[in-house]
Image 1 (tube, rainbow, N blue to C red):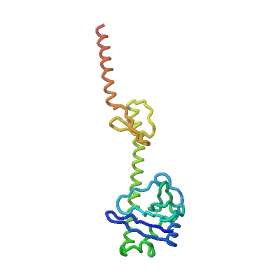
Image 2 (cartoon, rainbow, N blue to C red):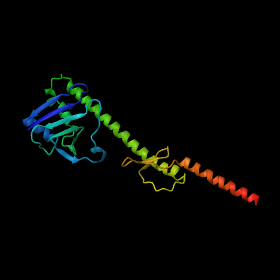
Image 3 (cartoon, helix red, strand yellow):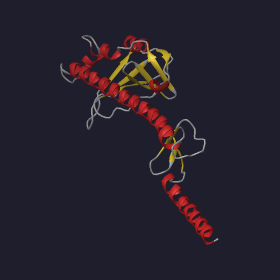
Image 4 (tube, rainbow, N blue to C red):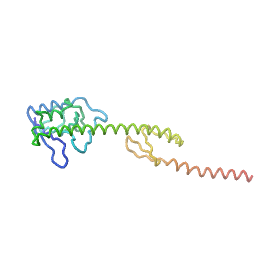
Length: 213
């Protein structure tokens, strides 16, 4: 069994690659053995742009260890094609950068393992910040839907039965976020104004007719 491990860390220059086989490859696969299956937002592979983006691991022989032939490890999680699990060793990155870790085999200077650790920490902070923003957006959207229903939809006298996940747009439309299907509705303000004028004219005509009679 042989493995090719690409440290996805650089931009504009080739990423370092480590080739391992034999007992070293067996040790890596043992540490990356899939554990619990990831669910929800956790199962989405992080989209990191700059700096450390994970380890791309390819099994150059027959796939083994219950892992895909090509997968990405990042922050304790393993992602592949229709595959997302927590790894047996949640600190595999620390193992790589240790005193006897595989990163020491690279010809990138003695300071590279420390640089790697710093980039991993920075990447973890960026991922945590992204998750926090996503949670705030979700909470804001939920709060906004409640306000839109209580303060806008009901106060405008709209009687249509909108789904709970519907978000109103202030141009008078709305969208259904679960399938991104745009469903336009009338601009409530213009609709009310446009329909108020004929009613006002009819009321005035009725008053004038009563006066004449």
